[in-house]
Image 1 (cartoon, rainbow, N blue to C red):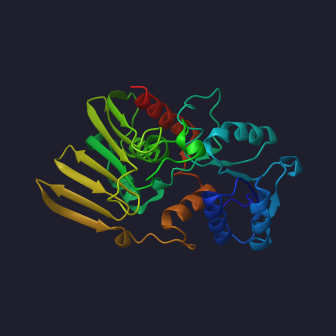
Image 2 (spheres, helix red, strand yellow; image 1 turned 180 degrees about the horizontal axis):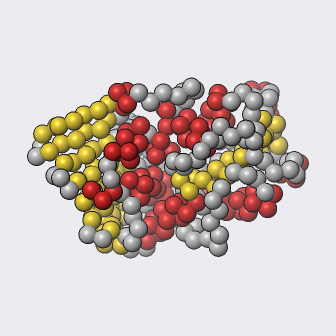
Length: 314
């Protein structure tokens, strides 16, 4: 951990803000936290439960000095506005929850090397095994999917507009994984279908990308009533004829239909000093306050947004 990371600011304190703060507190008791949350009723409750956290409801009351680390865990439509304020103040490191500004935010006048985006599936132990053991040049075809029963009725507010949809909310995770493991430079969208079931945005997306001579398939569905908990899956076809499947819990390698290797996530032995919502989130925070070697960069996140935008406009 870098010693200079001590004063940490959160913009917004919903489910993800609470998750990250709890993990960071568990990782290092010497960190000092400030939270800007405009919901005054919520802050009154939070102050009772987090007596050692400095809560603010008025941004003008924040300290003027740069923070060592700022986490932006607000809805995506104000990400860019908050990032401008953070950069003006000179904060040393910035974390923004995905998707960074939504799919319409697909370019930038400047890409900052101290800004990282919260694509947490990178830190899943099964994903890390694939990253360490399979070279992108050996992958000839890939498929990614994300299934959930997130919606059963029309959502309210921003979640029923252009900043949401299954492609933004869940597909962004899969696109980031495919870019991280396979590489999506020079992609072309060759097929895309979108369907609204309960919302006014995309609830089901089926798309195919072409990267050189490789096909990359995507299937996303967040209105699947057969799914109890969200599940992602990646399938990779290799030059040697092997097929690799991974999800949150398992790595399975087959050849000619026969399983030749199977590894469970528990066999990978991934451990963390503070466990909350799986090892992935803790591994992500460890990397954020440490080397940042695995974190999704701002440039990578903008590429994800560009791909989402191209799929939606196909």
